Figure 1: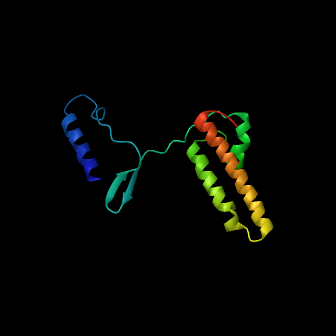
Figure 2: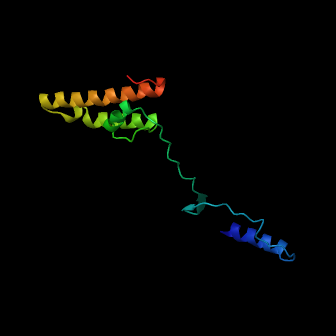
Figure 3: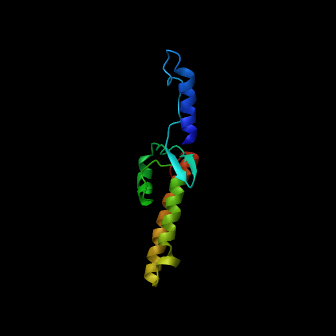
Length: 127
């Protein structure tokens, strides 16, 4: 905080003798400040949400399988695909043969949806 008051004092000292407003030239940085110990740092600007793009009607169902709104970036699709595979993988979830078969079907469905979305992002064509 000492730096702030030093700067304010310099501005006032230089400008009070004139008729001009002393604060017209002074522009402090805007934004939040975080404190860690004795250090003060500006916080980075907030992350912007990625834009969604228009998606063919055939792929809307595939985005729903991944639990995502249609048109999110491919990176989010890949992260959702991996998360769903970890949750539903037959080796992690199932204990009986029927549960393993059901988990294998679910993971196959998730992977097929992701592959259709991936192909559309890479080529612009829908299977």
